[in-house]
Length: 217
Image (cartoon, rainbow, N blue to C red; front, side, top):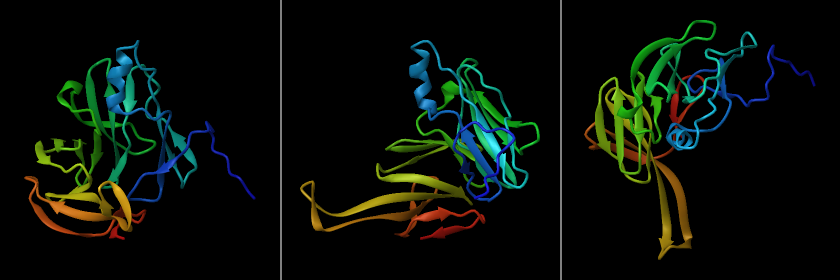
């Protein structure tokens, strides 16, 4: 078996950025934005590193060096660019970057971190949105602020054309907290408007494939 080596090998697992097949990313640890305030109360956070791998060239790119109390969110691919969040808890600043490996990261939105609910804070959608979601409420901060009620079994997976695409996990065949022989577990796609009104729903798992297509499987 032939094993190709990158110019830099660091042992950090790579994930494909959804919606395309060329770029991968890796992160130096698994902390999330809502974890960092706890670190700050106990001496501070060591900082993380995000890097990108170009499958066509075999090159890794590190747009930022490691900095204390700085964390990065998972990237997405939209309109031929990579987008990701950078939270600088020392400066109390969240920045949305537009990026292509080999180019300088371009900041497109900045706002103080205390304006955000840090739980499940992420980027998604076409165009790119900054959102957070809890068991009761979805909040969007960019490009258009809004709030939408959200059920505990729902998770937002995409935004496009003023539509919110939720995946809802469904359990059937549970009686008095006991699983019966008729038990079923599956996903349902629920589409809502920004006010939370349900526009449609159907059984299926909405999945984003490397060719950029969305398929209900």
